[in-house]
Amino acid sequence: MAVFICFSSRAVHLEVASDYTADAFLAAFRRFVSRRGLCRHVYSDCGTNFVGADRQLRGLFEAASRDNQRIVGRLANEGVKWHFNPPAAPHFGGLWEAAVKAVKHHLRRVIGETTLTFEEMSTFLAEVEACLNSRPMQALTDDADDLDALTPGHFLVGAPLGAVPEPTLLEVPSSRLSRWRLLQQMRDHLWQRWSREYLQALTPRPKWWKTDGALREGQLCLVKQETTPPTRWPLARVTRLHPGDDGQVRVVTVRTAAGELRRPVVKLVPLPTDDEYTLHRA
Image (cartoon, rainbow, N blue to C red; front, side, top):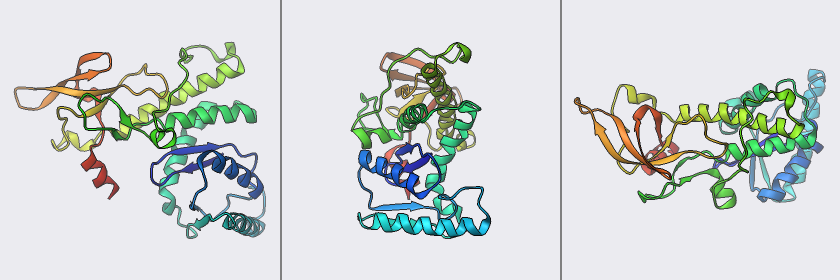
């Protein structure tokens, strides 16, 4: 599997590769460019990506060097500049390593020992890609009546990514499912695991010992729900705060697309504001 991530929008693109050779990677890269456009700069590590794991250490490095030269020479003719990390410096690729972790960590647990065909794997990764690119980053506008959030999908298609509405298959035994229904069940399992992890990452840890970044009226937030379908994030605007006797806000009223709800603060995940997002990027 080849993982491409945009440095500007954090959008993720997944491609299936048949092996670790340079030709297989170039085929995956051509498919990526055909759908997303030609890149001016590409960054990657410089080690053992394009050779087999069964080679001897000396032959491995020699083959990697030849493959790297072939790839760089081929792409240089198309105006693409390739940047390799320094040797023994995996932390230089923290941006794409985070995307690799988000995908691989859950794929191992969802797919397990199941053997998928190339077509099945391509279909499944396309749905996983849609889930990853549907994650909300911040409010789309400052309008208190707007319940839309900015996602990587806006940079790809100009609108939030959607999915075909299908009933969940999480509780159905896999032995009763067809191959394509099994892929849908895998997608549902991955969505359930990854969305919960993403919500936990958005929740600010310092809220337990200081009040900075507390919820404000008009702020866009996510409502934690266990029954949300893939690519659908329950968004809401805070309309009213309900402080307790000690002045701390533990309950708020939020407005969703279905109406107003009264929810505890621990069930809400505020999205970063423009100031917080700019400070985080800096």
